[in-house]
Image (cartoon, rainbow, N blue to C red; front, top):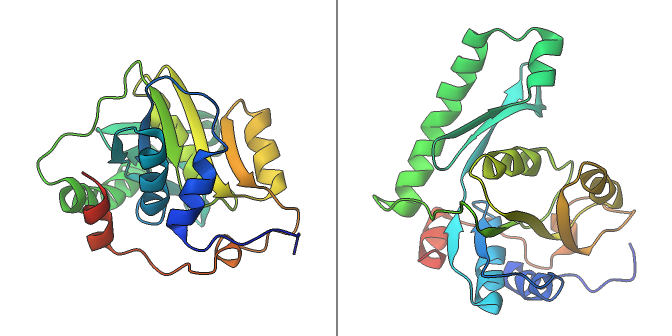
Length: 209
């Protein structure tokens, strides 16, 4: 591995990540549950910014679930990768089935994390979208598309760790990204944390106001 001090846990990773962020005007911090929320909570504390969860469910391409043909997300957002849908002639009824299946889990998480409270309004605001790391970046790309549909003035993806090739790909696609460490010898997100235990729904609820 590269000469790099692993993150103690997600909270420490968030503190280190906050120091890598550019100057931002009154940002809102959104954490992807579950693992991104403890990181996002530390970032929000460091920035003195409001924190919310942003639940996103990738709509996987049939037979290749790691490939996102679209996503549904907090706030009733649904986005599709039109190029992919058109290229493979994906029928609307298949998309609807995928969206309904993922919508069940999205609704459960929204209700679990937020209760009856509405999501924060990000229209016209600077948004920092946080996860505990990227691998291929497919889920984060779906989240980026969903947040953009809500009309923020600026969107910054922020992660403690990601492969160098993923960071480069995000940059080529015009996605602003802040990352503490982007190694060539990536292996996995968890390998860069000393404590990478599973985050529970209860911890998410405790961290989000």
